[in-house]
Structures are given as C-alpha cells and as structure tokens.
Length: 114
Length: 112
Image 1 (spheres, each protein chain N blue to C red):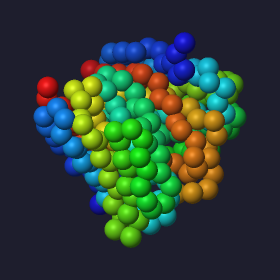
Image 2 (cartoon, rainbow over the protein chains, first blue to last red; image 1 turned 60 degrees about the vertical axis):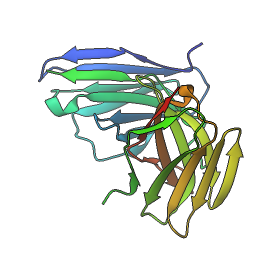
Image 3 (cartoon, rainbow over the protein chains, first blue to last red; image 1 turned 90 degrees about the vertical axis):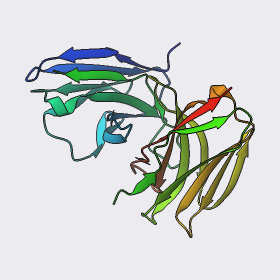
Image 4 (tube, chains in turn red, green; image 1 turned 180 degrees about the horizontal axis):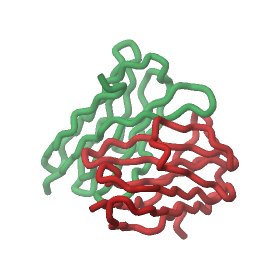
C-alpha cells in the first residue's frame, strides 16, 4: 500500500493555465507538506498543514493555493502557470510537526510548463 | 549565502569504497540533522536522524554532527552500486512547527 500518493505523476501544460495536484496519505499523520524541487535538486518547502490548519507558508506567489479538505489530503492548486513553475512538486507527511518526526515523501509530480 | 551548503558532485567511487558526504550550515539554531536518500525520479527517504552534536551509526551508515564547526557528515562504508543516489542533508531548529531546510544534494555513483 502506498503511504503518500500524488496525482498526477506527470503534468504538461501551457503557460497561463490553471492546474491542481492531489496528495493523499494513509499513514494517519496529522501534518502534511508541499515542497518544490527545482532542476538543481534544491528542495524547498512551500506550505505545511497540521490538522487542516496552515502552519507554514513560505514566500510563495499567491497563484499557489493549498487546500486541505481533511487531514489525509492536501491539494495544491496553481493559477496562471508560468515557465518558472516547472519543477517536481513533492507532498510529504509526518505524525506532527515535532522535532523528531520523520517526513515521508510521495513520489513527486513532474510539472512542465510550455 | 544559502543556509545550508552541500557540494552537488557528482561523486564517483568504486564499489567497496568509503564515501564521505558533507554539509555546512550557517544557522546556529539548527538542532536536528537528517540525511535523506533520493533515487532518480523518486521522493526522498530518511536515512539518518541525529540530535545536536555527536555520532550515530546504523549498519554501513554513520552520521556525524559538529555543531561548533557547523558541519555534518555522512559516511558510507563498503559502498554498493545500490547506494547510487542523491543524498540530501536537512536540518531544523527545535520547537514545534519549524520548517526543515534542505541542502541541494550530492549525487553519488558507486561503480561496480
């Protein structure tokens, strides 16, 4: 059984479009995250939710809007896609945002904006 | 200057070699230090987790933290081709709801 799953795995779209990426975890964790990994493999946190409440919101354009319908799901909606949004987006989850909590990552969604 | 610096490599070693991977950091508030392994086209997975300074060993892997020098290392003994991956260091301050800051990763290739 997949612990953290993301859909779609690949997403190719035109500039200006709006797209969503979905994430689900079946680990019973309370905290979920979105990360962006650029072409140089730099992994940077975008958002974190704990029990559906936003707890980390890095400097991300407001074209990116996370939504957590319940603590097992965290979706990412991106409006007006730009070339610079091309990257791999990873969802992750942990039991809580505590010091020793391990984050479990999904397989990633490779977004290409043309 | 980035908070966490890591040599991107690539690093190529023969099978059986001892591998040393390193990161330096600038934020003295970091207390928890992690190493993640990321295979090509996969998500990162946690390898080692250490708190504050000291060493931690797990099988062929040893993590070292030197907070006085703001320097962490991961050693891999008897490296195997299956160790070929990108290794990301990561760290965070203590206290709840603190973000994890990642290094850029070092790509390792172990040649049979």
